[in-house]
Length: 182
Image 1 (cartoon, rainbow, N blue to C red):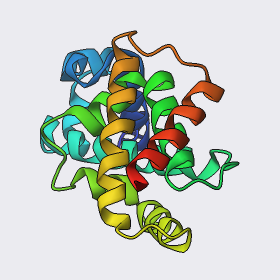
Image 2: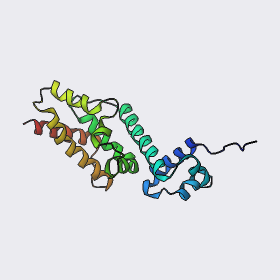
Image 3: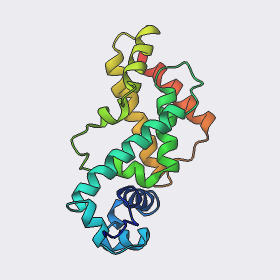
Image 4: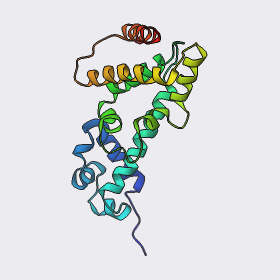
């Protein structure tokens, strides 16, 4: 009779995801993950060929997490790119390690920054169309200009150099959008 599995692939992936959220991707090794999952390294390598394969699944789980985060983020502002910017900046503040993994790492497992932002629901495309609706002459260019500002704010929040409150961030993004229109 075969021994019953006690540690599943899902258990391992979830433990790794928690580690990434708390400590960062650089802290995950087979040994540290096994300790977190409460098992030996054997179950990890039973379900994954190697740590790279786990890393790929972990990245996909992080992308899905960001997409859900953005989908659930309250969208209260009509100015194009403001809601996306607020969500992105807050994600950087609340999920620093996931933000680093998704938006600051060199290995994005074949996904571009645009792909991750746009997601399956077309978040960026919707914002570009919104800018076009509000009369923006070159909404794709506007996206790039706004994105440089938004990404800069998010990165500054990781180092503690961004301390604007939400209402000040909204004003900054609205004013940036207006200035870039000119």
